[in-house]
Image (cartoon, rainbow, N blue to C red; front, side):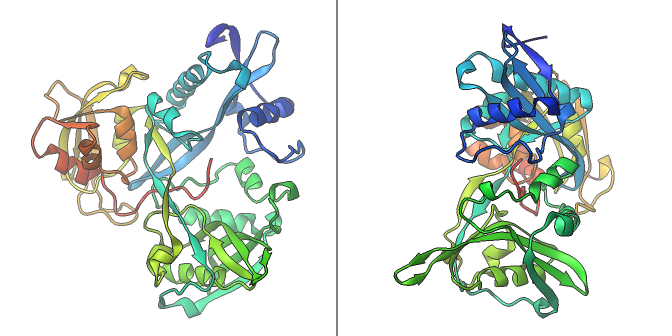
Length: 428
């Protein structure tokens, strides 16, 4: 099978080519950390595809993670997490990336995955393939001793601070992380490979920090949250200026969130706490007595591409009733192009208003139509609004969504919105 130019061919990859895969990855993404071939890889090999040159050298690859229960507004569906996309620098500008994206989209449709999601190494790349930025995150650098508001029930939270060890904590972390999965975009580490890699702690990857540590929060003996972190020891003439680097913090209720952050901002010999990527509505933004102290900054998070428009739009729930004809353009997947009638509300099933988990929200029916379009947009914009964190109305102010029927934009923007901001707590 050819790929890109005729001299290239597409091949399936497996663990026997691990060294080549790692070498290619370091060409695509330079790293000062020497590779360790004995460490686990997160790849699902039967979803990993390479491109060889005429001499059989691996010059490009891509893979995807099988997210079988990826959270979208009010529901879950099968999503392909596109990952490990790389091309050797000598073989750039030869159509290999375009060829791999086409292959990935075709594989998604074959497997019945209506949506593809990714994290973008470079933001300008994936928009031209129909991916829209569907979630943004927040990073902060908190000062040690940052004052937090009191939360009822915090005294009942039992905390332990331990070395993070795979054998002891992998199941706990997976269980709590999965339980937090009502947030759109909150991909869980479903495969054994992903779970193994997440808590691996090779010394060469610590960048001068200590080994991984974990704060476990329990209520009545049951795990309700955790925070994974490392400390970096730093001293200046004026005294200790250590840094707490928080990798992931998951809390199943407000009291647990307050208890975990309370530990992290009060560690001895530290001066600052660097947060992981947080949702724009994360508890810590409201717990801080002085929100300015964290200097919050937005970062891009999950990108979404609708591979099968009617299936994807039917799979999620909607915050309000709506009946709208969407005219969609899609140069990569012609089957998505055209006019689609989206009907969400009691006539499509049950009714009610959206709760956090989507119960009582509005299901949808999607079908082709010859009726005139109420809104016109590209599949990229449809992906951007799919998780409920980006407003159709905001995209319209930038000229990216076009309203043909007065009032349709406001109604549809309301229906696509969601009360919980989307985010993924880890990069895939």
